[in-house]
Image 1 (cartoon, one colour):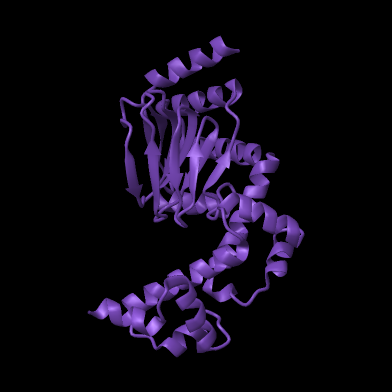
Image 2 (cartoon, helix red, strand yellow):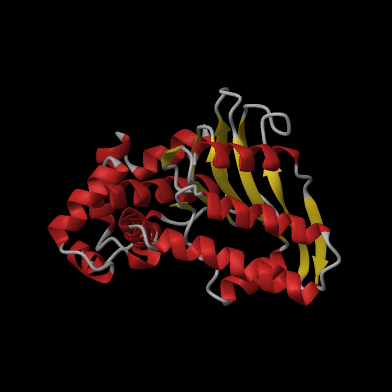
Length: 280
């Protein structure tokens, strides 16, 4: 098995990147190794969708919400257009990733088909010889004179394979549930939803939700919600002229006094003094 896997990796290191034009836009696929991208830490906001599937090597990623995750073989990143994140490739000279890049129109089409989930950023798909063979064959087919329709069909089949394999992992299902909960907790329009209700929406009991969330994010759901509300408050105090009363209402607080008290607890000063300090 190890020899077959290494043979496939050697083939991947030699295979050239392929680019084709489909009816919905441009499709690119291939492999990235240290010779293509030396170890580096980069902040990115991509114009097109980029799927990163790590075959070997290690790294680290920080998503758009500031959550950091270590990367290892089998980890897959769905780097959706305009989604800010930071990617770090470690200096072990072993990095090898398979990638698929889709133009914004193609990306939207795949989302509409349920083959890509805009809210999914991180997942895990175990590395296997059948999957590597499928990736190698996909790129090879792109180099051949296949019709755009046939290539589009092959693209959907490969993305579906990644999607289904990731969905079979219980650990990934829990991560998806927690990511959805984090989205609800940070959504300004969802601030009045009680935590047990959020747990119910993601299919967990409240105690299970609280335990898994705290382990995954390093803070309780309530603390996560508070920090995101205050972070949004700081942004508005810096970037807008909105009144303190309007801001409190916009962020879902019952009254301005409750907002000011919580802001001072987190930041050490009141919202008014915070704004004044920025103006000096």
